[in-house]
Amino acid sequence: MNETSGALLGPAEIRDLAGRLGVRPTKTLGQNFLHDGGTVRKIVRTAELRPGERVVEVGPGLGSLTLGLVEAGASVVAVEIDPVLAGQITATVTARFPDADFEVVLSDAMDVTSLPGAPPTALVANLPYNVAVPVLLTMLQRFGSLERVLVMVQAEVADRIAAVPGSKIYGVPSVKAAWYASARRAGTIGRSVFWPAPNVDSALVRLERREPPSTTASREKVFAVVDAAFAQRRKTLRAALSGLFGSAAAAEAALRAAGVDPGARGETLTVEQFAGVAEHLPEGAVLRAPRTSGAGDVEEAR
Image (cartoon, rainbow, N blue to C red):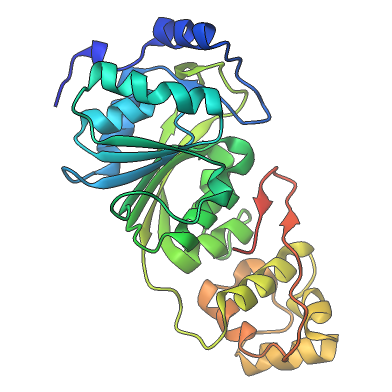
């Protein structure tokens, strides 16, 4: 591994590169460029990548984390929505690592259904805060080859993804992430390592793929129950699920059949219990569209 600081991008190089490209970080794309080599290497070490492992990175930006992944010997495919940044990143990588196994895909990550090369087994990324949850869930859903995930997100979002049943922050992201993987918070990242510095704290969350719950209900049905259960957190499940099941009485019958107290609230149920409830959805039930949460994350039923 090349441990020279010159292999990675520093603050001055980030600003110079952005200036030459005419790039101004935008809130719309959630752009906060990482410029600290020590932080980059900390993220890469935490990801515990195998030599030559195929890694997908979402939102590489100017290439700070990308260079760290390549430096560690990973085979990297990066998905970048900004055509200017996508056009530059290959030159940035090859200038420092001429033999790098790297390629870039110009696309919105939410539109990607396939990736070139070998199927990725790891996702490592500094996800844009405004779309972190839907991007994470979409990647887990579409790429079953992903065994491990390490993403940097807003600290509050990291806590929500890794939350357990019964906690105040347990909600839609927690349950949907648990469908695919076990999750835990894996570190805190300071604000000063970004340009521009965000006005919120950042954290790493690590996910390990596991089999989804054993259930006869489809993922779509389970996620519809989850969305309905948390649409109004203060309501009991009997009331919260009444619209989805057709009536409060029908919702109560389904909950009792699944062994769930109708007077309980959504934050007390495990993903397995939600799956059990979803098994009793009536045929032809209208699955509700994804909702937007108050925390700024679109919690999509993916």
